[in-house]
Length: 369
Image (cartoon, rainbow, N blue to C red; front, side, top):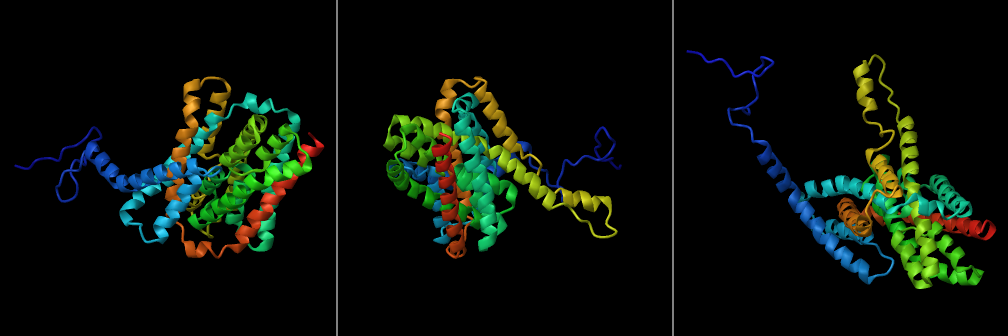
C-alpha cells in the first residue's frame, strides 16, 4: 500500500525533512547554531571593548572606538585572528555599527543646537561643507583613491571614527580605507588637543569663541571634550554643543553621497540583456537613504521632542560608545597593516583637511562672531 506525501494547504508536498530523510532542525536549534557561530567573535569584541574603554579613561581625548580599531588591527597583523571569529566580528562590524549610529541620534537635541544662533550655525555649515568638498578635491589631485578620500573627508569634517564607519556602509570602501581614515582622525585630532589652546591664547579668543572654534574644527567628540574640560566650563559647554551640531550633518552628508554614488553606478546592461539583468544590476547600487540614517534622524527627532526620558539620555553615550568600539574592533581585524603603512598620501590629505577645517572655522568665529 503506497502512502501519499504529506501536503500543505496548497496541495504541494511539505519540506519537513532535509535531503536524505534527516529532519530539519527546528527554529530553536537554528537560532542556537547561529548564536554559537557568533559567540567567538562577539566574545573577542567584548574583551576589546573592556580593554579599550579602560585605556580611554586613562588617556584624555582618546575614544574607546579609536583604541578598539587599533586592537583589531593588532589582533590580525600579529597572527591572533582565527576563522571562528569571523561571523561574530562581521556581525559587530555591520549590525552593531548601524545600531550605534542610530542611538547616536538620541544624544542630539535640536533646540540646543538652534540655541547656538545663526552665526555659529553658519560657521559650522561652512567649515563642515567646505572641508568635505575641499578634501575630496585635494585627494584626487594628490593621488588618494576616491573612496579613501571620501572617508577622510567625512571623518575630518563631521565626527571622526563614527562618521568614517557610517560612510563606509555606503561607499563600498575596504577595511584598509577605514583604518587609514581613522588613523588620520586620531593623529591630527590628538594634535589639536595641544595646538588649539595655544593658538586660542595667541589669537586672543574669548571662551565662547574658543568653544565654537574647537567644536567646529576638532574631529572626535572625545577630543572636543578633552579640550573643553582643560579650558574650563565656559569653553566646554559651547564646544560640545557645536560638535553635536556637526554630528547632525552626518545624516544629510551620508544620504547625499549615497544618492551621488547611486547615480554614478547606474546599471548598464549589455546589449540584448533582459529586464531581469537590469534589476539585478540596480540591486547592487547604494540605497537612496540607508535605513540606519533614517533611524538616526528619527532618534534626533525623538530626543528633540522630549519623548526620551532623562535617565535614558544619561546612559546613552556609554552604550553608544560600547557599540561603536565593538563595531570598529570588527572592522579593524580586516586591516592589512603592510598596505596601510604605504599610505603617506593619506596622512598628507588628513593634515591638509585638518588645516582647512581649522582655518575656515577660525575665520568664521573671528569675522561672524
